[in-house]
Length: 133
Image 1: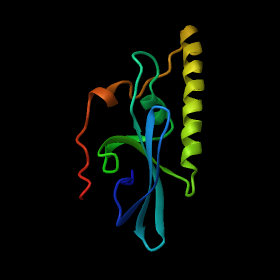
Image 2: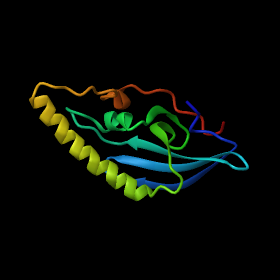
Image 3: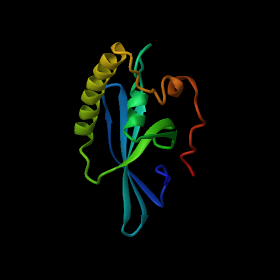
Image 4: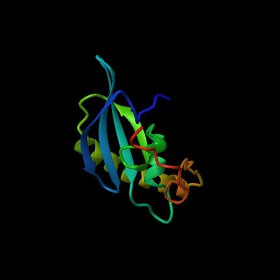
């Protein structure tokens, strides 16, 4: 996996506090024409049971790691250039609610969806990335 937290130049493009997740959109530049937009999502709440936002982010292709932009852990992934952060945040929130409902229906039938993260994000921490390096 490419390092989504450092480059020759990093620029915070936008940030947004969504429904239970704080987002930071960062443009990484590693050369004159070498840019990558990255989204850093930090969940800030969880429920005591069921599928968690951390699980949903993992299923959406976000990778959990230390984050220089949040100053702690986050879930990050590369996103298309020009992504509408507020719209994406809203869509992730709506999609998560629909997904939770679907998971509940499946569980009622005896089918269980794997929770790749669960509560680990909130209870087991890795060391934050030093933002000065």
